[in-house]
Image: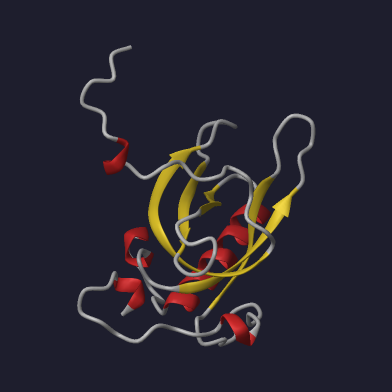
Length: 159
């Protein structure tokens, strides 16, 4: 393949695909999308792309799926409780669209799901909390409960 025109100076190198260590991270939701479940009709989930915005793992992404439309009522209740935690963590209590939850900082507790023979080790989102350590489900450690001062040329989550 001819690589004429490619300049590695203008492209960020790829990051590790290893899961980030378990712990609390300051994050924002950067994308969300309703997807059809492969398990049958009438099942839809909200796929969330969550990006770490501070620290050693800044820029890394984790994902969460919320089964908001599912014949299994327990799955729906779990998804609704998780969505409620996210809404409380970012201060948007009655969103009309999932995009209203984007670019708002929150603390996200991540764990590592071990490899199981079929899949490699991966990250799972376990909890959401406010930046200031306010209770959602539980508060993150105080060491992670800081926010950056406002600045004009910073991304929304750093203001």
